[in-house]
Image (tube, rainbow, N blue to C red; front, side, top):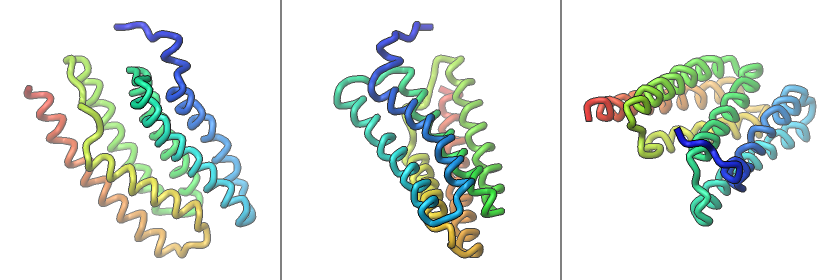
Length: 185
């Protein structure tokens, strides 16, 4: 296994990933203690800053040839942690979010286990598939809407959450043959 170089650890894109991870507890504290619309807007602003940083780190990495193996790990790791933390916070307000969290754990657990098994065989997915990107984007939109509009009706929130669960379940199903092909090749 190659040793990770210090300059890789502290590349600008990777530092953006660390920053996103550091924003997670800040968001959680602000959101869970929110008692005014201003507090919810600050929490939403943190999510937006995290998202902009996520978009920028990939652009910087590609444009300035700073793509690293560690960066390929830290970027999605920061994404998953951020989405999970926001979903956990939202589960205190919207009971259906608990079911989405369970599905997230199942999907990400499957992806991690299959990814590790294939890595042991020297194979890995060649980046996220289009349906994985759609799932991530719709999850982000859902989380932002629920953070930004805390007064949304429970029924509307449930419809949005269950819709995202359908998208996530379809994404999981579509990834199964991708991993199967890797196993058989």
